[in-house]
Length: 524
Image (cartoon, rainbow, N blue to C red; front, side):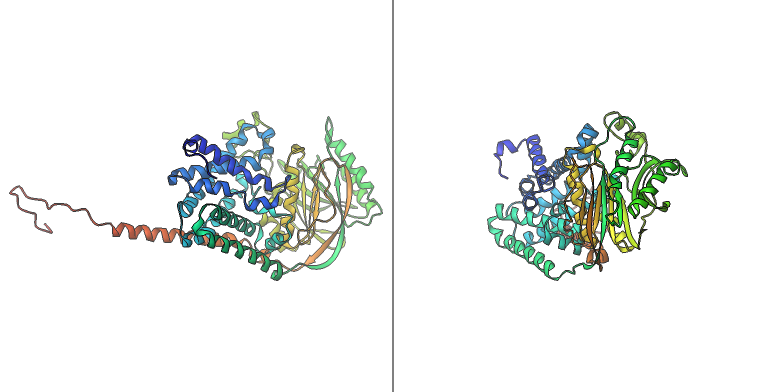
C-alpha cells in the first residue's frame, strides 16, 4: 500500500486507511467465502504498518486495523447492538496494537534476510496471541479467526486435524507476511519465495502423512428446521411446526432427530403435555429426539438453555446446560456498569445461567453424541474435549434467527467443518431458521445446506469414524509454540537492551574540588 505522502501524513487519514485495510479479510469468510483472498488480505495492512514513522504510530495502525477487522467480521451485530458494536470493536481492536509494533520492528525499511526469516515466525505468533486472548468467552469468543476462512479447502482441513484452526491461522498470516515482503522489499524476495515454497511443502506433507479418520459405519440423523415463526404465541406455533415436520420422518429409519436452539420455549417439567407430545413423536419415528429448552427451570432459579434428550417414555434424563454464553446476547458483563446496553439494542434483559460441565449422551443403540449450543461450536477446545470423552457425533443446536439476511448464518454453519476436521468426528449443525449443515469426519460436506428460506426436515447419512487426530491428542500446540517464540524474542530483546546500555560510554565528568580547589581524593 503506497499512498501519497502528504495524504497519509495526517494521523486521522492514516487511521482511516488502517481500518479499511483491517476490514479486507471479511471477504474471505462466508457469505462471499473467497477463501483464497485470505492469503493476501492482510498485505495492505502490513505494508501500511511497516511504513509507520514511529513505534507509537505502528501501534495505532495495529489498533485501528484491528478495529476495522472486528467491525467487519461482526457487522451483522449492528442492528442488535447499534453503537455498542463500535465500542466493542474499538476495545478488542486494541489487541492488535502490539502486533503493529512487531510488524514495524521486523519489516520496516529494508530488513535483511535474517530479520525477514524471523518475521515469518514472530508475526504469525503475535497474531495467534491476539486470537487466543479474544477467544476468551467474556470477550466474545473466537468468531472470525483468520484460519476458519479455510473451511472448504481439503488440504487446509487436513492441517486442522494436525494443529487445529490455530495452525491454519499461523500459516495464513505467514503467507501474508511473505507476500508483503515480495511486494515491498526487493532485496529480500529470495527468503520470501523460500517461505512460500516451504508453506506449500508443509501443506503437501500434511496432506500425505497426517492420519486420516478410519471409517466405522454410518448413522442416519435428521435435522428439523421450522423456519421463521413470528407473532403472538410464537413458542407454541414453533413447537407445532416442529412437531408436524418431525412426524414426516416416520418410517425413514433415522437414528437421531435434532431440533434447533430454543426449539422448546417451556421447561418440560412444567409442561408435561409437551413432554408427552415429544415422547409420542419418539415412538412414532422410532428414535430419540434432541431438543433445546430455553426457559426458566422448575428445579432451580434462573433461565437456562439446555439440550434435552427425549425418548419414547419422555425425557431420558440426559441434559446439557449451555456453559459459554453470548456476551450481551444472553448476559451482560458487569451489568451494574453496562446495563444501559439494553436501552440501545437487543441486549439480554435478564442474564441466562451457565452450566457447569460438558455431557456425553447415549442415544438409541449406543450412539454417543456430544451436544453444544449456539456459538459454543466456535470454541475448538469444547469439541476436542467431547471427542476425548468418547463422542462419536458432535451436535450443535443453534438459532441465528436474529440475523436473517446477513452473513452470520452462513459463517456460523461453516465453523462446524473445522470442528469436524479437527476432531475426526462428524458434526451436525442444526438451526431454527438456517443455515443448517452436516459435515463428515474430515470436514467434508454431507448433503446440502438448509438455507434461511427452508422450513423442512432433512435426513443425512452421516459417516462415523474412529481414531484420534493429532489435534485431539496434543491440543493447541501451535499456540504453545507461539508463546515460546514470543518468550524467546522477549529474552533476546532484553539481552540486547542490556548490552546496548553497557556499551554506551560513561559521560566525562570533571573531578569535584574542595573549597581549597583541590581534587577530591577517590573514595572519600
